[in-house]
Length: 171
Image (cartoon, rainbow, N blue to C red; front, side, top):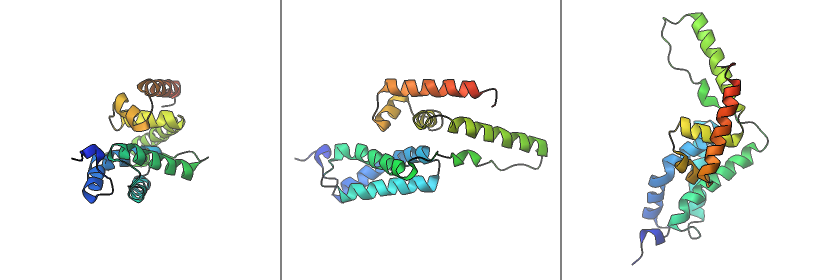
């Protein structure tokens, strides 16, 4: 009898199961890589397309790693030497009429300084920082997602916090 782990990803029910298990976390992973929801959706969708195209070569238990690797490679290919802009910070909450122009200006300046501080982190530090602090992922989950050790996640987070603390007078 064939077990779930031995199931071919080429079977529609198995592929659907892979999508249900990993679709959201893959989109979140891509979102924190690029900072743009639509772009993250594109990376995730393309990763699933490539999984389907290579379904005969990818066993069920390796599908998650395949998806994350493909998505990450797509991201690296697109942005090679460009700095990632974190657009999600620019989204502002709906404002009430009670806020003064001075407050709105100060808030805008703060958000700009925060964006600058986060974007000054290395890509690896920023990725770990956002996955942990924004997505609530544990170090163990991040390590599995990025295929690195928990110690590497700890080191990246430590270095990210040091960098942000140095910039804290500006924030």
